[in-house]
Amino acid sequence: MFQQITLVGNLGRDPEMRYTPSGVPVTSFSVAVNKRYQGQDGQWQDKTIWFRVTAWRKLAETASQYLTKGSKVLVVGELEEPRIWTDRDGQAQASLDVTAQTIRFLSSRGDTAGGGSDYQREPAPAPARGNSTPANTPASDLSDEDIPF
Image (cartoon, rainbow, N blue to C red; front, side, top):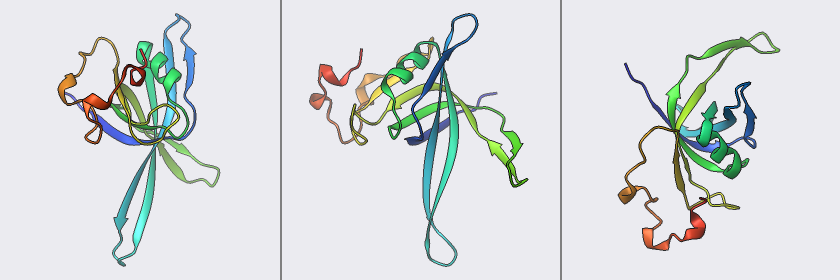
């Protein structure tokens, strides 16, 4: 069986990188995914769903180095089984955790709209470069400075 989730949202805080006891890097960050819809009363509604994303190894190091609070990001990964917990008011809540396989930076450094770079966890194959640039960014507009490695 196979399942995959794709998220596009903004980081709610700076990533936190740490190491397992055996020295494997792991980075965690939260992503807010916003949805705008028209309610039954005809009024526009906004809803935000938060996901906690975990990246491992080289992907963890790259995410920690280049992502910051507010960065727009696309994450492709595996949704873990939701963890249920009780808040201070006694209400049941769910934590939605995703293990990242691919992270695409949709914000340029110091910017929150535009640019972009793909990163995948190892040993996943690299994406085809032919169509990996955003639709509004021609490949000819990218320079060596846009590639962080």
